[in-house]
Image 1 (cartoon, rainbow, N blue to C red):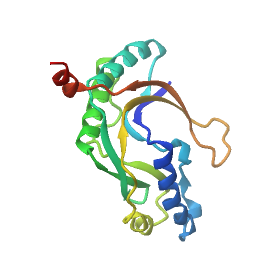
Image 2: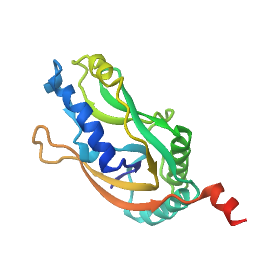
Image 3: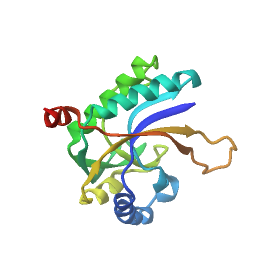
Image 4: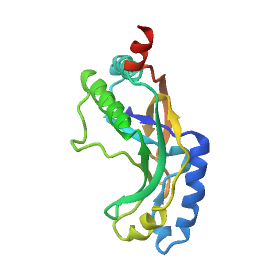
Amino acid sequence: MRLFAAVLPPDAVVAELAAAASGLRALPGAEALRWAPRDSWHFTLAFMAEVPQETVPDLTTRLARAAHRTPPFALALRGGGRFGDRVLWAGVTGEVAALRLLAQRAEAAARKAGLAREEDRPYRPHLTLARGSGGTDLRPYADALASFAGTSWTVDELTLVRSELPRSGVPGERPRYETVGRWPLGGGDREREAGG
């Protein structure tokens, strides 16, 4: 099964971004983009590709540990950007270093569970809004998102998500996401300090 560890923004935060992004669909070329449905918006921490069923228990144990070691932290959606003309994304601000640390811990959990990293590039936190085939200039979309500033929220859990790719061949069909596990973030160093 295809799995990834993620941070899921709360519904109110998603609604703010959806309102800001709604105008993007009126821009020239928007119909050529594959827009990610808002119920799939997330920050990927670690993508694990194909995970054998027998590996899932060890992986989930390790992810629970990673979550417990990480204190809750504050984030807010802010601005937008693009990866060339392939991906349009919303950015993030706040305790981004804590998000990166959680991503490192999720990657380490996957590696220790015996899962090879599919991509070897630096972690760049982003929330994918749309994908292009390279034929649409995404600069106007990113520029339109530049002033977006969402409400801050506290990230308080790590989520493991199963991604099922479309099989029907129907144009426009999207992957389906299913939550496999959720673990509350713990106190980490703050918890140990409070405990004496």
